Image (cartoon, rainbow, N blue to C red):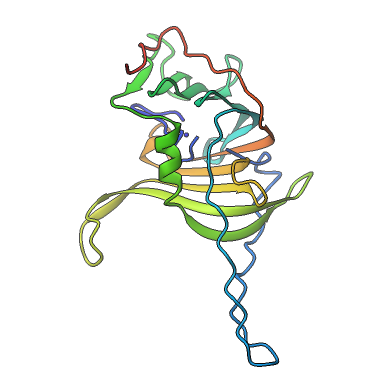
Length: 240
């Protein structure tokens, strides 16, 4: 769920946010409640793990896209309609400008502008081969690991649940076998509604244009009403 040669996975997030970093940093995670012995000797039940993040079919939100090592902090929007979704970071007047989409069962990324990437000839719209949609993305999110409850501090503190989801190449067998990380996402969603996204940190090969291979996007607003999703003219037709 952003600027890269082959794709910027709305998934590694995928495709939400918090407040502008630099002003807002994630608060410390609250420690999990222990199974402590009570006065009568009974053992307190372990807390129930919350529901994992899910991307809704219809939504719209605004925030900031941040690449700290490059000093980049630009406007960011993320919208969904009928299961399609689109991220847009920056614009013609900003040092970066790109869009990522899940559109009609296809994943796209198009970078208009990025530091040290020539403007001419214009970059092609990358269509990731294969079938991909919101359901596949949400199925991957079901495998996320719960980190814990946290407070995102800003103009308005937000109580969130912190989740981590990753894609690793190589062996899936425990032990001393070759494996390497492809992508890692830290996702922060509303504690009362895991389909309301407030912040995402993405790290990995999907961020090839950034020397540190990481990016933040943060949301100031996130509403459950249909947004606007538009496939750029230069993008090829979606997967049939």
